[in-house]
Amino acid sequence: MGFALVRGVSADIVSVMSTARERILEATEELLATKDALAISTRAICDRAKVGMPEIYRQFGDKQGLLTAVADIGFERFLAEKRRNPLTEDPVADLRTAWDSHVAFALRNPYLYRLMFTPTGEAKPGAIKEAQAILLTAVERCRDAGRLRTAPELAGQSILSANVGVCMMALSFPALFESPDISRSVRDAVIGKVTGDEREDARIGEATVLAQALVGTLTGTAPVGGAALEVLTRALRTPAGPSEP
Amino acid sequence: MGFALVRGVSADIVSVMSTARERILEATEELLATKDALAISTRAICDRAKVGMPEIYRQFGDKQGLLTAVADIGFERFLAEKRRNPLTEDPVADLRTAWDSHVAFALRNPYLYRLMFTPTGEAKPGAIKEAQAILLTAVERCRDAGRLRTAPELAGQSILSANVGVCMMALSFPALFESPDISRSVRDAVIGKVTGDEREDARIGEATVLAQALVGTLTGTAPVGGAALEVLTRALRTPAGPSEP
DNA sequence: TCTCCTTGTTATCAATGATTACGAGCTGTG
DNA sequence: CACAGCTCGTAATCATTGATAACAAGGAGA
Image 1 (cartoon, rainbow over the protein chains, first blue to last red):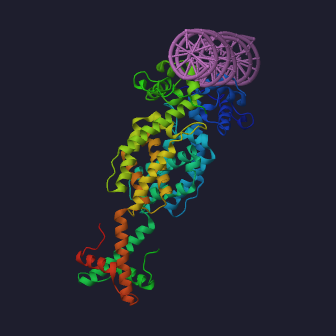
Image 2: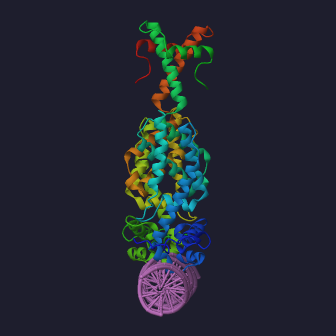
Image 3: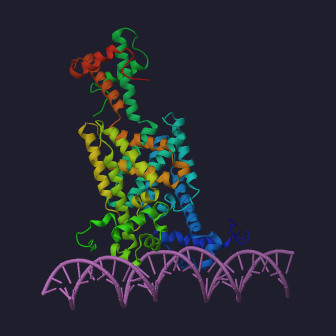
């Protein structure tokens, strides 16, 4: 507790000669591009940030504190990247592109990603809740479009868990698990299950209506009409049948 | 390279006064029950194992080497537990119980699990391939039962990735992600997608055959026969139609 | 000007991973 | 039996690293 104030409010020259705190964060991020978080020494950070060792502890209290702050910044980038993805009129497709952008981020920043999603010790980055919130709104767009089978919270948690799993395996065992096929497979499975697979729904729907119409007509209990008639006429135009190979 | 031999072949008294190597491994596992792997000091291991510091380096060359060996032993336990699961006549249900046993293991041995599935640095435990192999045979049992839509390798990789993701999120963010619902949701999504959801397949299959028969009959291009006839008569016996609410 | 706060420097501590040197004790061979 | 060779244990030592303490420099505001 007790974050040091940044020299009053006169943080104008920041972009030119950034404050010590920012330089430390930046240096840590740069080192994270090549090394694992725990393999980075505080001295290396201080050298690169041109600050003395005590500065880290004055600013972040702890190495853990510094790493947690870096993880939060990582989440900020992560979420900013997701927010840049334009929303289309198909919320389910938007879920899929969000998944792909998640995977791309992980593969592009492996060490940062591990720091963000597998924190060590007690200090968890708080920004994960924000990620969850964004995912939740994306899922709720599906619900509002009538394309959700599950509770939105559960859907979001499921998607995020599976997404992280694909990334972690790709990072930990790249030789065995770094394949776009795996990502696509799991992605379509989870998203498909949660939102209801469009094509299958359509096939089930059409075929079911058709069958019901047939039964109704043959048994004389219900005449063919409405939706059943539409499907029936469409089926008649395509002699191969409503199902595709 | 160059694992030290264990004092000839006279490793009989092992259970009474175990060898140094075994004591070190055992001590590390015990400490892993409460601490993270990187938070364990080699001295603490040596104290508990009643060996001197050089013994670790003589046996494993490195702290990494020791941790990798422990991870491999962890995989051994992990796989032994899976092998104990009896196989039923439903290979898909077996996949689900394997998933659940995986999650249970992770929650029971959090630090060991993290060491196994998110190794740091270059040393990866080789036993992950064994885990993959076991999962592969389980998947192939599904294929042999005609219950697989995907290539077995891809199916196995997908299931394992998603399974690890659920566990890692539960361990890293227990407050937000340690819920059996999430595990079940992702499990059924991935396994269902890979093996084909039984009920949906049935519905699609029946309805499609029925529709094709109808079209064929009405257009005169193909008479109703064989499977279509069967489905048709069954449908006629259940006026509510083959689909359920 | 004087004082307070921030920042930078140096030195230092304790813990830790890793290694060397050396000796005790057992094993197998001549 | 004696000797060489190996495993194993002990102690001392190094370099690195996380973390602090002590103190000086320097600017902002009363």
